Length: 172
Figure 1 (cartoon, one colour):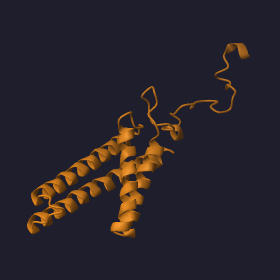
Figure 2 (cartoon, one colour; figure 1 turned 90 degrees about the vertical axis):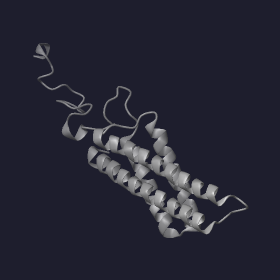
Figure 3 (cartoon, one colour; figure 1 turned 180 degrees about the vertical axis):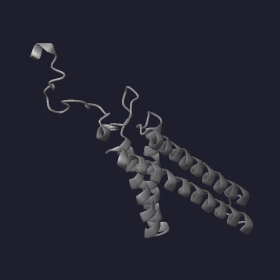
Figure 4 (cartoon, one colour; figure 1 turned 120 degrees about the horizontal axis):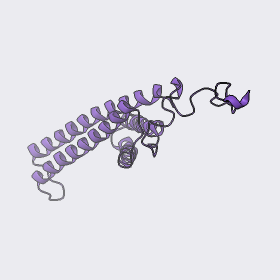
């Protein structure tokens, strides 16, 4: 996939993850506020502990999604693949969305499931489109091929024969 697809997918996935991070923090904050105001308890747990736990979970998940979005923004800006740390972090984010989608279909409904699957698809597409970072630290696979600056660009590329300018004086 060329940069025409790679970069927009990275940007769109990053924007969606940022919006989702805000949504998760908001929903968990709302749940924490309701639990705190109503002094709700589950199996004898302290309502303050439940409220603090909801806030902590929302903030932790929100920060994780922001980190994933930052990794996607970096990849979209530089048009380079993901490194050793970024790739597993984004794969974990994709797995998280798959699990949350499976839970959402039963707890919330098909609309939430659809949203989670769209985010999952964006993450998988970004992971596939950017591929692994080359060992020499270069651009993502196929980057620059359309402009003639990628690997194999130049006269006679792909023909298997050298052009007349490359043949040298002994070819005459």
